[in-house]
Amino acid sequence: MRPWPAIILVLLLVAGAVFVADRPGSVVVEWQHWRLDTSVAVLALGTAFAALAGGWLFIVARKLIRAPRDFLNARRERKRREGYRALTHGLAAAAAGDAIEAQRHARRASKLLSEKPLTLLLSAQAAQLSGDADSAKRHFTAMLEEPETAFLGLRGLIARAIQAGDEALALKLLEQARKLRPRTPWVLQGRYELLARALRWDEAEAALAEAIRFKGVNAEEARHHRAALLYERGRDAQASGRARDALDLAERAHALDPGFAPATAMCAQLLEAAGKKRRARKTIEAAWRLSPHPDLARSYGALYAGESDLARVKRFERLAELNPGHAESEVALGRAALKARLWGEARRHLQAAGADGDATPPRLCRLMAEIEEAQNGDLAASRVWLERAANSTSPDPAYACNACGGLSPSWAPLCPHCRSFDALVWRARPGERASAAAFLPASIDDQSRAVVGSAAIRFPLSPT
Image (cartoon, rainbow, N blue to C red; front, side, top):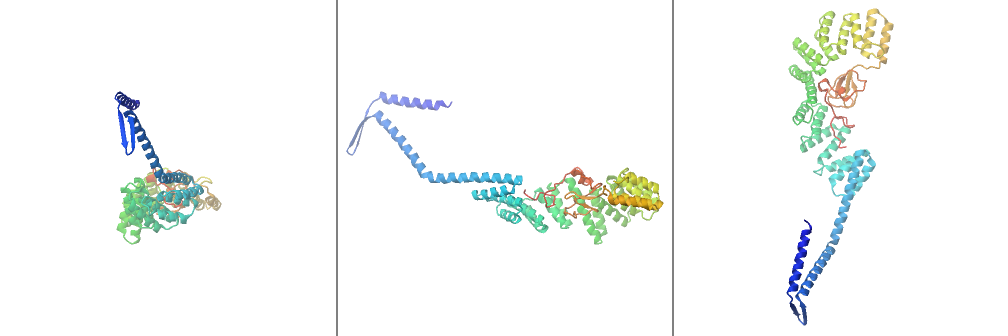
């Protein structure tokens, strides 16, 4: 279809030429002392050439007039392309961890580009990679002045504050970030974590509820966090003499996560103090069925401290039946039998728990040493077991931090090594390498937790 317009134009021109040729005529033009005699055809042709020449001259003149502006625009566009190329290479270098290249491209991009938000982001990342904290802070602060990068600037400043140990400043900056983007997951998670680090349990629980409402935290993980917060609130209530409030909070924590041994043990203790021994026993038994723990065994034994040693053995036999074959069930029965001087039963249960050879955990070695000394007065055999306890390659169960890997003999709301909130989980063999799932509490076994950077906080604060 494209040739048709040209063909039609040619036909029209030919028809016009034929029309003029068939109708010859003369034209006389007089102007002052000049006279021009010519034909109509020549006049038409001359007029056409004059129009073409005029049009060409107009185009040339326009190009000459616009030449300086076009030159400046072309130069500006070339600088812009080179600036974006430097920005692209700089971001790629930052992603690859090449601090020197990232800084070089950041300087070139800053020189060539007028878009401050983009160049500030690259400069901040390059400064972070090179370890220049002051420069990174300066760039992140400058990013706050640009609406496009204010949120990223806050994110970087929060990361710097946490790395510097200034959690109060980090929390203040998080509140600013929350005003800009209240539903961002890392803002929601970081807020309740920092409030918990500040031991502001009530506020942390409210912040956690907000994170749950906006789906900023996994439901199963949130349930364990809520149980931990309720447990800590219960401990505060107990310390201040509010026994009824403490019991209510402990029961709520136990209901949220029955496998959370510290909350269950406290709940049983408070129930016993309130004269509800039967409910205390059922509470421990429900938790033991899910996840046996030494704290639960101690609380269970405390319920029957006034009974005879043989009666207590029967009690622990009933408890062990709820989770038969579990190492903690065998250890609890072994301890009860040892106290009742049932040496054979004590040996059998401890051996079933793993008291066999040099790989025996230290706590079982010490119990076996106690049996040897109490039953036979065999100090040599007792000493052998104590030496095994000192040289054991199989550590006792302990709490391990799923953020930094540090160990703790007892549960605490904050890891004693990295201060992560609710990161300590019970592990039967803390010395072994395990998958991420092995670090999680029983109630959230199938969930994962993100551990980011040297800030030792479980939400992504660093833009890099």
